[in-house]
Length: 312
Image (cartoon, rainbow, N blue to C red; front, top):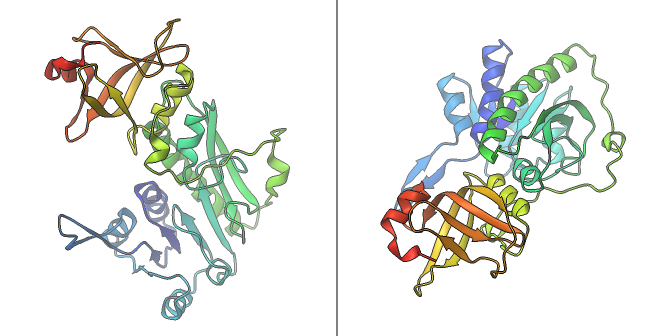
């Protein structure tokens, strides 16, 4: 039985279905109201895929609801697989005889929490990976079944790492199911996997204010922050255009320029044609792709052609 919500989880479900594994049912998030008047209900990606494959779907509002628990029990699943869902009560994760395991997009115990990919890039990590682990009471703390690493390049963004981990994670799910079914699992406590890292870095949920750029940081810190949030939810800033106008910008891509200067942090330097640089403590971030409030995402040269007031 499979539980999940976003596109990241679909790839794991697809791998199970196409691999011939018996998926007795799917639990997904309730449909969300969308549109101008919130009058249209939109299914999450996992539900859409499950329906396309003729799989039965449950969408409980509350995971302790008696009716949901009865329906779940009726599926008589041997094993439950969770990918990018929500925290489960013990009555759910303890139901199947072979247990419940979760796929997490980090090398646990590092980056426990809701946004592991974002925070690994924001913190300038050189590698990350996927982990499968058995669920227990505390979130993201259960015994590890399988881990696999990938490097993070200096040019990687949330989007590129997300997509690589999505496919890597799907293969990790299959390997984990095979190991559990073959009774070859030797789960390890996360305390044994700290690998001489004494400080555990968290991955808390990201909110809009989390995404605001602090220009009183180094070029590298800001560069990593931008790519760790690109393209979603996107780093943003407010800049003084020098003509009395404040620019409200989302920033999707930038370039590092390490060069001494004596300008205040957050100052704009531009030729008005192709370059729009913003000062950090030890240099500049050359903005490459941005989106002004109420406008479309665009390259900086296209933005400057339409905004003559951005001259520094």
